[in-house]
Image 1 (tube, rainbow, N blue to C red):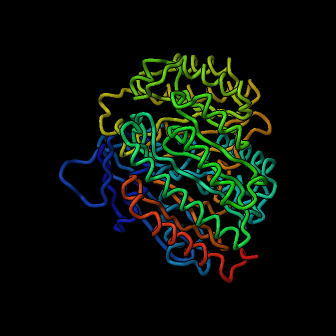
Image 2 (image 1 turned 45 degrees about the vertical axis):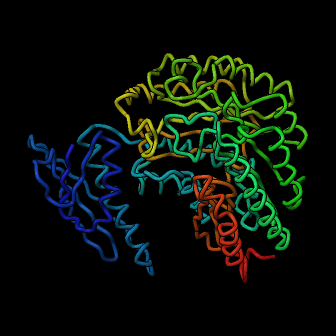
Image 3 (image 1 turned 90 degrees about the vertical axis):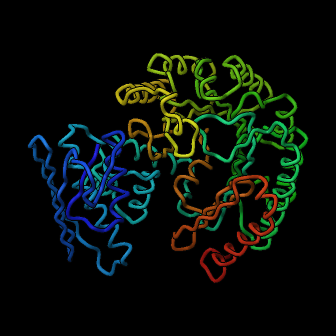
Length: 503
């Protein structure tokens, strides 16, 4: 599908227009300049910018069909150049989506949104003092989000504020993400920093030495500046890929280095790969009062697990879940993925039926996303996935199943190139939500990333976000962890010095 855009010369429009086109068509090419070959259709824009942004678009198809849309948006007074362009871009996206919806007869439930955190928009409106009705109208009018998705957003925001009543007042605390970059094998859809652990013991030892250093230095800074920790999350990779002894030393380091660990609201350890879970490792978790873990089946169809590169069996998932429960893991999350290769409605229903036998405290239902760097994206022809209609039906099944079994949605995020233009939703039983998941999605406080590939998000008193990432591969991390630790401490000093965040 080749779409020629007329009337817009600024190349900054190219990316957002491409992303929206991808919601409607596969293998889309969007060009602001005329290129060789006849376009499937032309969209002609008229753009006027003054006190108001006025945009009109006309879609002219090769078969003679014509579709038009227009939208006006007031330009905020004293807006910066960046803020002005954002208003212009959203107004252009509004009419662009409208003509494409009219032409294709497809309704995009998330409207013009292609970012990953829709609920952040609703939180922001409520923090600014808008009523729910006013905030909902803004989402519908400005972003073309449907009533169905706005209600989902509101349900999630309500649940988050019930779980974390002081959510808007946690800027002076931080959460900690600790990345362990090793897994038994790498899954076909994965782009996380994850390296097969076999034969890498030297890398593991060096990495853990660097991680302990980071934990000590960041802990010292937090203690010196009297900054509390809200949550700690061990992710990866698979944090339970390392040995029980290494896990024991890691959690001892946490208790030694971090301030007031006993009053941290939540500590989570992803044990996502069932083939990494052992009685010895669960004993270590118990020893350090950690009872929130993930045991992730992704699917209960063995052929699917083989196709995506997960070497555990369905039976092993069930067995390790029961083992964790017997060893007093009282808050277990499980993940399912909609749209895995070869799976349709019947396979996803089977996964839900198997989940019903276990009833984990929380269930995250992901929709498969073709991430650019994944094995699956590089070899799409080898991985046949369900149609858009089937993907939507599976998501509806998940919503119905969770509601019938007492789970409620408490966080969501979206990804580019996600099947069906849908979302990933975390559901939980009452009072079993992951506070860390809420904090990472709603960006209400700084999250400090420690370890290989760990990304930090520093948030200053004005809400401005600065991203900082550690190296993704263990060798580079091992060579430079001191440098990266010092850079993070420098950023923290800049944020807290002479700021309202300092006590």
